[in-house]
Structure formats: C-alpha cells, structure tokens
Image 1 (cartoon, rainbow, N blue to C red):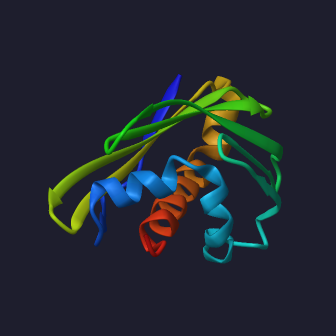
Image 2 (image 1 turned 120 degrees about the horizontal axis):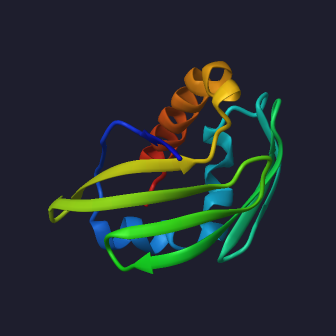
Length: 136
C-alpha cells in the first residue's frame, strides 16, 4: 500500500460542526462546485456513500466504514480500479478552529505508481482544500 497525506488545512469551525457535515456524505453535494468539473463528474450521494466518475480512472464509489465523532471519518473504496482507504482526520485547536488532514492508502501496482504518483498527490491536495473551503 502506498500512503499519501495532504497538507494540514485550517478550518474556521469547531471539530463538531466539521465532523457533522463530513460524516454525512449527502452534505458533500453542496461542495460539488469546489471540485474540478472537467476532471470529476456524475456525482451521486447519500448519507453513507458517494460515487463519481474521474477522468482517466473511471467510476469510483466510496462508503463510510468508520466514524469517530469529532475526530475521524474513514472511507473505503467499493468500486474502483484499485482498492483504497481514505481518512479525514480532525483536530480541534480552538472553539472555532479545526485542523483537517486527509490520508489515502492505495494499492498501486509498481508500474503504475510512477505514472500516477503526482496526479494522486495533486488530487488529495485539491480535495483537502475543497473540504476546508466548505461553509460548515
């Protein structure tokens, strides 16, 4: 498994508010406009899962497999060319200030890693920035 980690993002809301929104994936529908529509399309959302089509990858479906209130939301791929797990980690640093970090663990074949490494790094960065920009 290869691990990718986003930079820590500052979110000007309490960890409780951020967690409440991110632990219900249907709330992410409101953040669609923050994602690059030229690279990601065909979103569907419900409370525990979401799916979309990613350029050059195909359909990806995720499901929440673990929630730790105010701290972590763990997602796992259900439909994807490669198996992966993603954690959204939250740490409250003030009453209205939270730090957020994304971690992605993906099972990449060696020959693919060199080709997609920079795209995955860029993608995890953009997703973290988009999640930090949501009005919670």
